[in-house]
Image 1 (cartoon, helix red, strand yellow):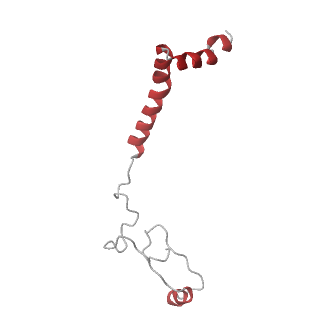
Image 2 (cartoon, one colour):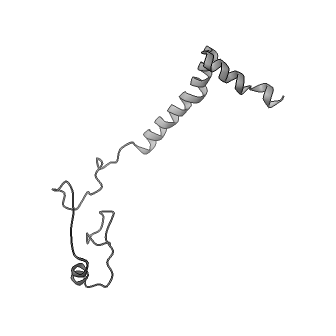
Length: 100
């Protein structure tokens, strides 16, 4: 069987534009519905929201809506006693704002 005779895309699109019920049902049944169901399944499996209610910071200065610390670099290096500083970006560090 020739692939061109099995499915004629031009004819199908013409029927779809004309409002042919079979073409519309085909699109809904085999394209739209599976796409929606895959998205719902992925949402259920992986969850749509984070477990912490959307907060990244779960440990540092929880009483503030936004944690911002300003410090001069030479002052921070002297305070840490290091010649190189690595700052935490994950909020999980025990020595925040420095990375463990």
